[in-house]
Image (cartoon, rainbow, N blue to C red; front, side, top):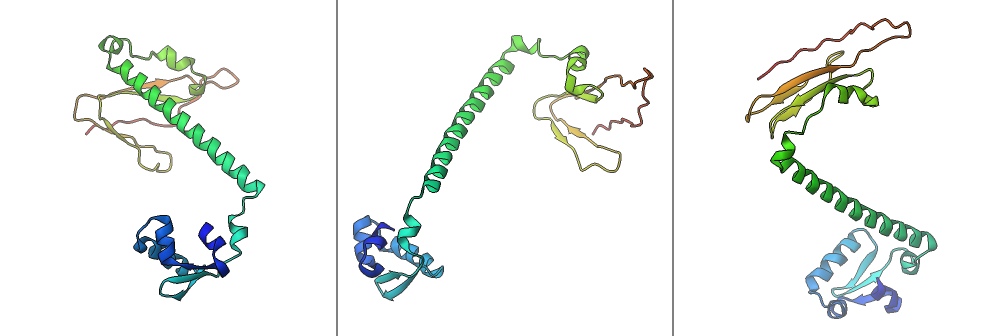
Length: 185
């Protein structure tokens, strides 16, 4: 774009462009074919093109809005990289924890632990203990039915229903209108 801006009347010699940029002519022709296809340039002769699009100085000018967007993009990219590093570090720490055989005997959750989590209040929680590489599939729900399919080739799958009692304002237990069934394959 800088070459187009400085070219007399916006006309460029493609041989000169190839030499100045240090690239093969084929690459320059690839670019000019695209620009010609979207009608930003037109061919004057075999090796000469002319800019016919919008004012090139307006297109390449950096406005404060452009600079603000560039700064924001830079900040977001830096934040994304930092988050990627944190995720990588957390995954490594989690792997170290789960790979330690001593930690394996301590890796459990009690019914009381589940009941104490505020998010699970008035919910039915299903806890699943399964070997590595267990596949879980949840097809689209049908009316009042949610289906969960679990498959394991490495050992048994244990499923626990952790129903937290529901109560209304009168203190009476609410009736559970749903049903729960399991199918193993």
